[in-house]
Length: 250
Ligand code: SAH
Image (cartoon, rainbow, N blue to C red):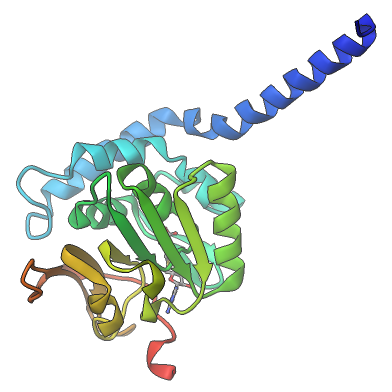
């Protein structure tokens, strides 16, 4: 038998381990009231954007996912107070995390299902990927700025979004080894719809992508690949995103 002191030390270590686990899952419990208020704001914003949101509003599953993701963990310390306001926030390196309504809208538009694989271009903070995580089987996300990609990957791991895989690369070219994707979310504005992403969209799949130059009006576009392989595009609403880099320069 172990001496009592040794048992107590072991118990203390086990408890410390438990405490560590609890503390990493705790952020989901923080600031619940602010998240609930954010959801109400998203719903009313959706009612004022009938050209983009279908009559039934944003899918409750999307709103539930957003109610569970601790957005304040995805913004820099100095922005945490503003994390639940319906506006974009700086995340460093000249990039921004989109406003909650736009994240909800883009997530809703691709209609991700439980067995689907989704590709995100522009990981940024990792927030959009975290919102997609519970709605789908697998999220692949590509970020071109190494520091942002590495930080987001570490944050997503710490918060246990285990079905998200991040890589640092130029997302213009997609992620062919995991294609086709049932949904693709591009979170930086492209001058045109990137053909490699259309190529990597599954039949029946949906892609949402902001299109337009940095100094001209950008529009959120919905691209659908029908079962017969034909492509339809729909312009939804004016938006303002940071530019998609790379692509044409190769
Ligand atoms: N979805 C992010 C916000 C994205 S901001 C979030 O939830 O926080 C747009 C991001 O796209 C920036 O981080 C930017 O560095 C990245 N980006 C720009 N061009 C890219 C490209 N060609 N491939 C991958 N990421 C790109």
